[in-house]
Image (cartoon, rainbow, N blue to C red; front, top):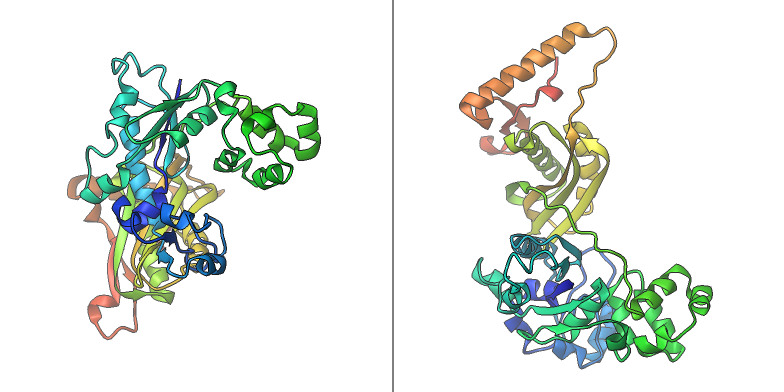
Length: 405
């Protein structure tokens, strides 16, 4: 049995500081700085004006001139949802999450472990039982659905009420549900408008169509939508829980330009020098920032190959840092996924330099093992033209891989 945990309007609730702030005036998530002008998630009050996520901001304001635009907080959303997923995984669940605010897992192996009370625990507020007050406000009001497949469980959660789990047994229970629910799957979201133009308004009407006709008109996405309407779905793909490794740096002034690039170099050096890395390469990282004007910015970067070379990492991340929409007051770098251990590459006929580098690396390891990560440092220029001497240079962890002659 698949269980779906649904926190509707999750991104909007995080940005607004809790769900209580969405009960009054109509509100919508403002477009991220530098992105196209489409509103994000909308409150229930805004939905009564016909405003929906993905609508152009001009049209949304025309429909509701008193619409409140809430600055987005992608970094806060990622952190809050990561805590929620970790809370679910503490139950022993292998969780799949297609988007923030929606998580699915197979509860078959957990019922005996928790005496068959997994669903009741979640309905009674298990997610919001611990954490900060703001996190409890965001994670309260989870709706729980059950079903034989991921889509059935999601449809059940969509129709459930708080503390009242709902169950969808299969195609018979899906027949009367609106075809609009297919928007919750990225593969089938674009088909909803076409189905409605053809007069197909329920999942039962879609399931009644011939599979060949659907395939001829809509291709593979149409076949997936047809399977979903008939109660079939692809298997769950649970995420692999990872370890969190993060470095942050508060900028003394609104960081931008060359100073921001040097701050990025300092974060990379600190991250590579962390003892928890254990010589592993980095496969995917998240570069984020808190903006001076309010709100946050977040960019996920997957390297083409696992890296442990700070120079190459600066080249890749420096291009993404140029997309920062406004001056930042805090810069953060987080490892999302590690790669294999660093493979040391040696050039031909350089045995002497190789042995010297190995001895240098071993000396640094021994020094850090005795005196901690600050045992071997190097000087890094931050703002050489500053009038304040303390801002011109800083000490950063020394990496033998980048040591000069």
